[in-house]
Image: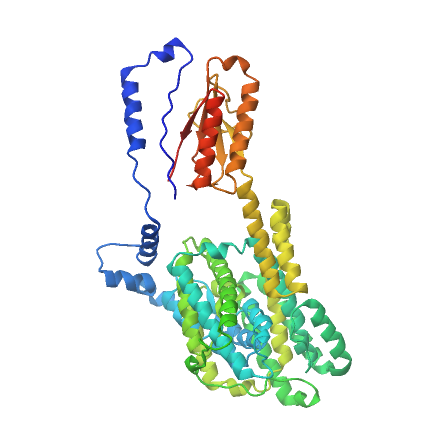
Length: 615
């Protein structure tokens, strides 16, 4: 960061009383001048980087040893675990069981979206939640596979390896990109790079989620109709075309009727749970009840012999090691890293948004950088144990919160319950209809579409709404990555436009105070209180090559307009006070622009004084 040169300006007063100043005031000015001249030098970039890492790793430095601080920062459970009680365990146990009843069927369905075998969804609900419970700081967030990330993988990974032609190679790419996603997330947290996630703006997320929900919903038509041949593309035109081609030849009415019947049941249960908060458990256990009842119906009626598609074999047992399947030096490593980076950003954005929403309800602060590190480590560990990218799920977190969870122990209970299901009950899921998994996923999608929020964005900021629309239609009609890229591009363009065209406003003093503010926002502010003196403020955090000339020109325009209306004051001299309190960074172009501004003002007989300068 470049420091401004210290330039002193003499100011001539406009009346005889002001010319005769008292000695104490002169001495005060001299002392304040010394403060400015002797101000400390700004820290070097490497010093700021080391300081940020130290603050992130050891936020509460006390009398503890370095090792103790390291473990407490890395494993928050060591801190809150000291005050854990039997009462909290009871609440977490019940919440964990309720969470598992929703997580098991959803995980199987999300694995199907990701074009993986059902057990990989269950694996992803075991190891990542356990790691997060040790390292995460959110009390309510529920970890596991989610619809959006699953859809992201199913749309991008098949471009690298076809899951039908080479299912083993497809799984290897998924595990490899999960490793990269976790690595990127951990790096973001370690070096406090959380601002990178913020480039995916709230408006873009709203559009992305809505578009993803529609794409995921259309893909579930394959399961509802019982089609064998379906497009692998995710755009709405390809999916609808595939539906129209397959329905006349592969439509199974019994399969469709069974799926629609349980979809209605799930939506009714969801509606009842929303209206009556005491029945929060009903929409939570409805998916598991649907799986159990539909499986019994198919088994007893032998409906699988009449067109109902079923899961068939689901491998049981604990997660197998996938460490040997990681392809860190293969031909597809660059593509896996790219997909991993996109997945990391999307997963972090969803998890941090969910975590902060519920943290604000409970009244505690959620450290985004710590969450990134926890997410990173859990996904790296997941890549070693046959998991794909996991993150926080909004629907399951809402269930966890409503069930009365107290800490992240509910994730541990949920993971243990899934392990029990993997060990004992996978054979019972042989006759589970695929249409039921499709209906479970469809019932969860309305929560991803927020029309009210989109309307609010439209009223608030039209450019943000454009980013929302671009993300929405980009995902619907082109692809996930194109939709995201276009939305991020618009967000960058908005930042760029705001930075290159900042406003310069005249300042005035509020009556009976020493506070100065913009006269266009506060009409009661007193402007031009002192004849020949003009106070201006720069509304930009940067004074750089992109906006320096624009700011200089706007200042000169205001100065000349003010001077043109006060020709009589040119003989006595004029003063421009430039408030730099909003300016956080000035580069060399900014320095040259200030020097040129000073020279222009001197040629007009105007003296310049800058206040509230920063490094």
